[in-house]
Length: 433
Image (cartoon, rainbow, N blue to C red; front, side, top):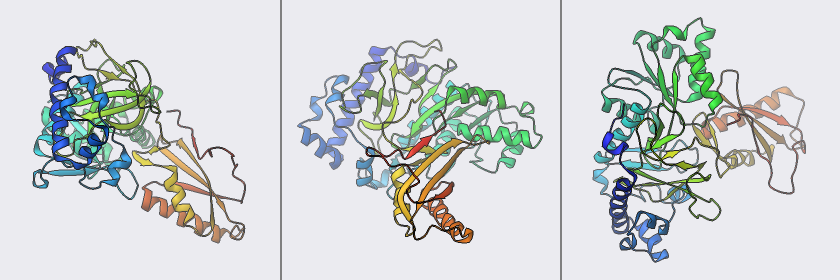
């Protein structure tokens, strides 16, 4: 089944024409209404009239996350503030988050692209969708909610956590479709097994899982343990939230809603565009967004694009499952964390050295687990258990309150963490993403 057959099966030439019309209108809006972009255009000597072909997008400036933080909160606003009906923020943990502001039309667009994604994964009006993504400033929960409402499904807005309740609700209300992070889905399965609850007794048959990277091996485990079809979904707050792309029944790439979000792959070092099939950094332009439109946003995600009619009937471009990042950001249970943020906490501690190592792994419950090894200064390192436990608790508490992660803190002797004359290896990621 296809939600919007006219768009999702549109011939490539017609799609390019549609994209160009939207891009021309977008550049005119950005130049007229957003000083941030007007400056960028002027610095490059570019005018909206210079956009005559969709390939001309390569002439336009990039946008980075650091720039978005610098113009917080409304530096991208392209409409009067009175037209904004909803705002969301990134799940990142820096002091200055990224803001996405939505007009009524933007909410309609979000609902449309999420509807397409849910239908790609087999959801329909007869489904009961258990939405275990977090609600609030995070875009995950509400984005799925809008899409479920658009297709006429019964939505259970349970949000994340409280796994015992998740399973009871899943059983009692006959949920047929599950949305949450892939790691949490496996925790649900494990909790059920440990408490004598059979997932075979549930009606859940499929689900959309995203907000963190996952592997094909993890999909097999999810499908085995949960007895469902698992589909990958992609999105990011800077663009709109979830709903940018989703897998269809073929599970060989994510169809991008390219009439709404124009994708490019670039060489992360040179910024030059790369051809289809070549791996590089993913870049998106919001072609139709009104509130906070964004031009050539560098996601830092690594993937490649492929084109051609899919056996599902869709003609939209596909992006391969994410293959890594160009920066050192970690995604821990859906929360973005940079090693430098952990370093900022440690350097503020009188007792610790700015030498540390972060070890990330999938735990026994299939959830991300973080262990941070921290060097303690000579004069503070002690065999006294109470003193060391107090320091551990302080570090753990700061990371929880400021970064939103639960980390195991291991205090080690001075000079016990290997030094490097080059770039220090701060992160050991054992998740095999």
